[in-house]
Image (cartoon, rainbow, N blue to C red):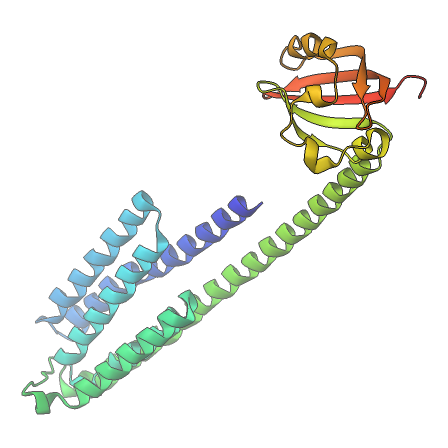
Length: 302
């Protein structure tokens, strides 16, 4: 149950990462085309945006090879951060429209884990402080966006942030919903298996037959049921790992060792009680995967 559930969760995480990456790959060239043809911005931004799209595309393709979502996530969010900082520094610094996207990076990180969210919150917070104080570090921002186009581009960026956040949170909600359903289904399946296992344990413990599992190579007891103590007087712990001749007579050995895989044998043999008394039992045994599963009734019992 655990492995299929884990596999499903990983596949859901991959689906979210793939959808997010595809959204970036589709939107960013369209946004660049708008800047290029609509606003006549032809310097710096095309290089930054196209480089970012190439990294995201390669990262997405590599995901199909290594199937490790954490690596894809780290590369995606790291490259996004670097791209946003580059865009911010070339479009007005703290007044850049792209600074709005910087502040939502922790939202995506918190989806992965609280630790990741906190780390990226600190990174983005420090980045904003550094951008605000660039002149103290002897650095300067540029602005390739004409002043008259600032508000329209800001509108497009804010609209993109709203759409991206909404789509991403919707994907996350669906992902979490599927995860809960899988967990609930897995829990019910585990409860059912536990109930059945308890029934089997009760069946073995309260059986009126001797039941034992024998290592067919070593001819030692792997497991015995409580009737060995009730009927024969042996403590269960003292029989586990001991030769079956502790209980069975030598005449039973050839009959047990002759059983082929999936074969069944029926025979009668004397068994030795702990107090030295001997009793005749009717045995049935079957061989499976290197083990002998044997059952016995005292003669005269139905």
